[in-house]
Image (cartoon, rainbow, N blue to C red):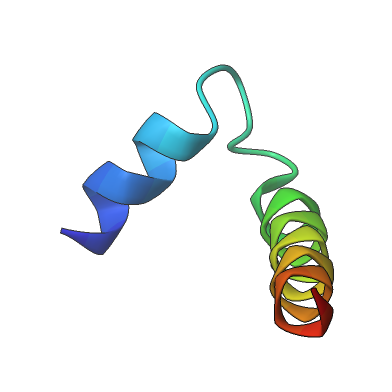
Length: 39
């Protein structure tokens, strides 16, 4: 399940920078969650 979700979230050649992309997505999600909680 996790692999399918990752592929759907980020389509394209992200095999080489998978770690960087995953870290960026985590940071963005955290920021969005904090913003929603504050609102």
